[in-house]
Length: 317
Image 1 (cartoon, helix red, strand yellow):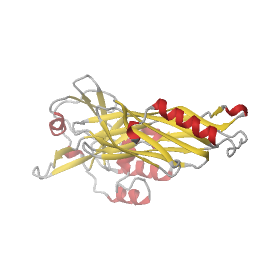
Image 2: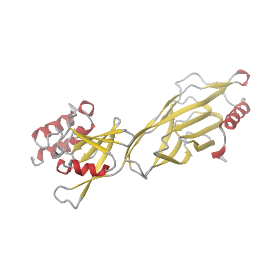
Image 3: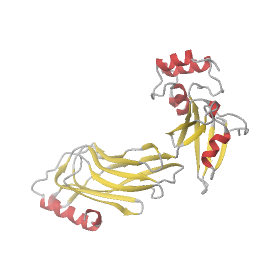
Image 4: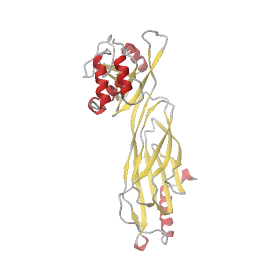
């Protein structure tokens, strides 16, 4: 029954519930407008399931609201919609409101003033994804609060902020020393593009990477955009540009552990740059996520004295 309720019927229910509650609901002083947010998700693989939370904070209170979460139906399929701790007892939803929207609404006889998760929507990622970055949009077409004189509805102003979804297939390259062993390259979303992480540049040849994109066009460039010869190795800062059949291009920036300056060697200058990161004199904002990841030698998500010690003691090559 929940999934079949129409928007028009829901609004009628909202109004009826609010009018009935006239003696209960009181007017609150002006406060910051409630902010509704959608979290982002990255490191997703084809076939994965991911739960996206719609949350509220700065909540001065409201009695009823409608919410529409937009998504790319070519990539994501909604599986379920569940109410969160900040929702009311009266929660309705439609996980296929239109071809690319999830709809849910909350209604209560008293002001809802809690912060936290309002709803959790679980999606499945398409098995056909190669590289994808897309938006999750959120709109709040109806949000009503206190009942004013004459039982009119008091519209509540709010803000709504969407999120991002990043998904990519697994990418493998053969080990340069033992070709029967494959290394899976890590893929991390970064500012609308991707970082392609590897343990060594010795495995990163054109052919090894291009075999992961047999039906797509691939280009390989240096950090400054110069095309790379086919026999060259890729290292930190190099770009892999993958173009889909609909001419949509995605860029992967290479990151090789320990080769922070991207010169295809691990030397004293790399240890110096790791020290600059560790001390805070150099940041990810200064030169980019790929270089910061290259300085994170132990892969724990931060650059600290452990990484500096590893860089100083690494064999020069």
